[in-house]
Image (tube, rainbow, N blue to C red; front, top):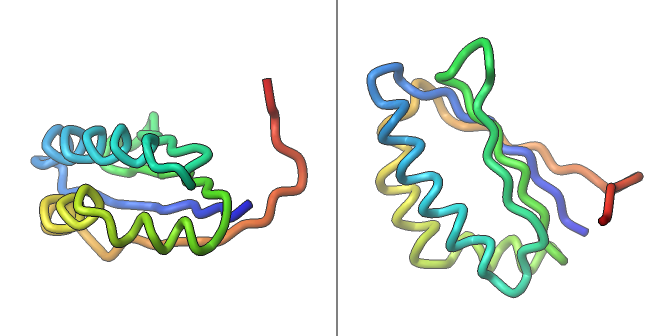
Length: 99
């Protein structure tokens, strides 16, 4: 499992637009064969901060995701709305909930 947490800080006046383009990208990402999970969280006490939980079957699947038209469109639309460059942290699964 290849797990990435992505943190984004958005300009306050662009939060709703960011949500729109991000939800469109998330839905398309969930349809990728290598995508196990793609969650988008908005920080409760600071709505300008978002975290993505992205899980892919492999690193190759995560790299393939970055080449999709929907991800490239998300970059084009979302990055200009950010206060600062997003951060990405890679994780290894230790214990995951499966239902």
